[in-house]
Length: 518
Image (cartoon, rainbow, N blue to C red; front, side):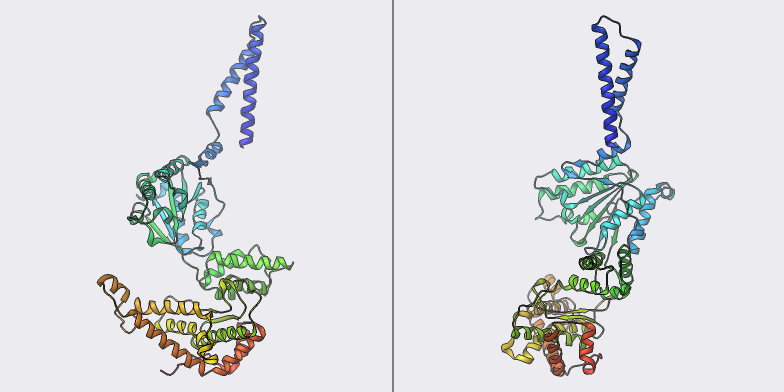
């Protein structure tokens, strides 16, 4: 389009020049200018003036979609629709209303309804907030301005505020459109004494624009954040971001729909069980599920397979959760210590949390510097009971308990550092925040903040950790032979899948919860 327009302008300019040259030539040769020459000259000049002042709509939109003070703000019409977005049905229903409003505002005007000035999408990373914003613009068929909050943050005072004003000015020229600001917390954090003048001015400019522009302009502002609690209250008040939509992690059925969506263009083998994969990927986001299937596709392509097999998917799952396995470099003594440590975790999980799916136990180094890992997948819960948290803590401490039980105090290794830190955090939350430290009506953390003064929360946490460590030690000692049997299997095979663990343990361990002696 742009090339054709440039050629037309060039041809018109050439015709104008030719007309002027012909007129000058006839005048110089003492001949009167012919009627044809005068007509050619007049038409050429007229066309050149018209073309200079008028441009087709596509060219005007291109100009609107240019740079704003050094910031890319390209208005596109996304080809994404709500049917291309799996899960998040409640969020989609809320956004469908806005898409319908953008398509037919008169229908809502009859009821005196106005379009929300802004919509805040919040939730964990990778849950599809940007995809939903694109789908809204695509469903409504309007231009889509996509920017990041960091685009407005500058070191020079006034630059960010100017960019905000220019963005809304450009959007109004485009007519009905959607402005999407990702990671808005970069510019919209709550104002305090530590904020810079530049950030405050940028936020003030955004607040002014959100309050000032007319809803009849057809400009809808969407923003996304992972940290809703960090945003300034003035940004979230009614009349600015009127609607706040949570985009959370998908449930099992939603994960299955996401997996089906992302596997449509992939040659999946018949042995791939997407329903089982959906059950095992608890707490996975939509982006994580897409990455998992992509890793499986890469693995299948690397071995020139016709289809993606269940083994490819399983290896991709392990790689996504725990990182890629590395060749073990530990000597036999270190290898035995790692095997006992991971066997302790696995056995405690089977005894204390039989509802968990023990997917894999490995003594191979993986991501994050771990010498080995036990991959346990918990069932989906709305909330945890005190017993559930205590069982988690005991399973974390079971690796250290197994080291001491087999090798004594002198066999302690540094491999339990992360386990001890996570166990301490859980017990700290139980005692200091959740009232699970013996005083069910007291939140020690809030008490210290509100009333001041110290408390014995640290001592309570220490006693609780020691109590849980003693309990899991007694539990493992009751199944010492099974612990050694599992460690020997890890020494031999280095990694065990859930089915192999069940086969090794057999009838040695009952899936019923064991209650240790108090």
